[in-house]
Picture 1 (cartoon, rainbow, N blue to C red):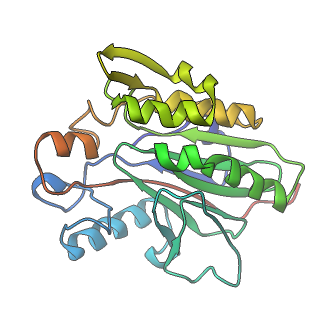
Picture 2 (spheres, rainbow, N blue to C red):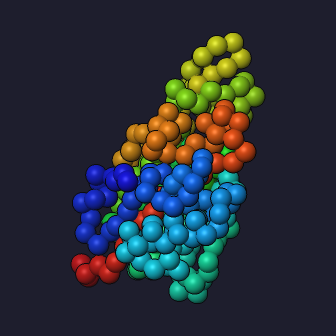
Length: 256
């Protein structure tokens, strides 16, 4: 379990970047696999999600999750749709107290957000595709739509590290086509291969949007005992992989 020092300072706000430990799954899903899209036993996934909900002090039905598709789609949860089981998006935002927002990852960047002035929380699934398509910008835009006067904090969770993220030139060129300035997020590794700093790319986007950032700087690929990793599973020729979960929730705040 990993926490943001900045978010921990707020009373009535609970959050956690869960590791892969202390769950019920077996094999290469061992043990806290929260990926409903994985081929793991549904029973084990449910038990894992129940455990997460319990740790966050909410009922499992109050844990809002997403069908994540590497898009730039953001959903605002309100009193009309708060009872939906799952949302087709890559970011969630809510002002509803007692709801927990969850994002599952296995190398992509989990981001949890809190607007301290307006008591709004959010979470983002930011892989390279979603980040390039504007999932971060869209999410902050939605925060500002709810209230333009805000102070937003973002905790950027464990993700694949820049020393582990080898990419080819076609990947590199996608980012250069978007902006020549994106070249700063790549370093040369060998002929036709580069290393990509996804964390810095995401972090810089948030800073540019006047968001106060905090990084839990852990590499999901390298830390096999702590995290699931899509890339590591591929390298080991495993036919599937587990997902870690990151969650944020708020209880009732007293009026200012």
